[in-house]
Each structure stands twice: as C-alpha cells, then as structure tokens.
Length: 119
Image (cartoon, rainbow, N blue to C red; front, side, top):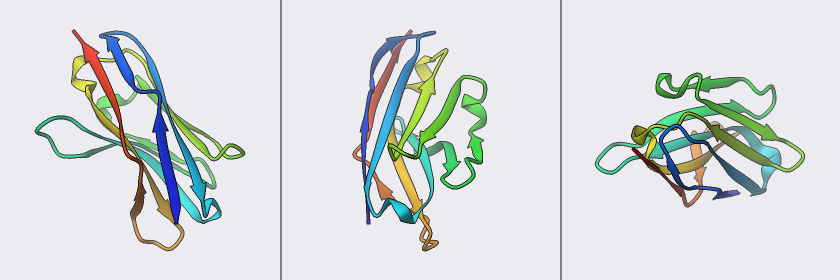
C-alpha cells in the first residue's frame, strides 16, 4: 500500500503560477507511475499529467501542454506539478494518484488540493 498527501494548492489570479506537491509513503518501492488528475465542479475527473517512476516518461493532457510541468524527486518520494499561465478553466480539485507494479491501475489516491484561478 502507498499513501499520498498533496500540498500547495491555493488561490491565484489568471496568468499566475502555483506549484503543488505529492508526498508518497509506505511501499514506495512498488511504484510504477504517478499522476495528477483534476476534477472541476460538475465535470468528470480528468488526467492532467503522468510520470513513470523508473524512466521519468511523461505525458500531458492537451489542455495543459506548454503551461504545466510534472516532475519528481525520487529520493524524497515526492512528485510536483508546476502550473504556469493559469487560466480560470484550471480551477479544480487536483488529486495525486499512484499506479503500482502489480498492474492494478491508479490504485492509490491522495485527498486532493483545491486550486482556484480567478479571472
């Protein structure tokens, strides 16, 4: 089992920046990949970005390409999402998720952190 805790959300004006973090604990040696998802009011949860834990292969949703950057610090077992040029449409609860080597998909989730972008 892997436990995830997000931090760093908040309120920012459009065009601004925020960085959110996700700290992993527990059986972190079983990590295969980590990701950021977000869910806006009335919308389905969507994948924002993902990073493979072994080779740092990265993928982004089209809506955030060129504005967001996902990264990780393996020694700290922490994943980050640097969000630049934020738009009101980025307002959502951002969730950290982990997929383990057992092939069970995104099986571990954090509690979420609110990001609010004002126009």
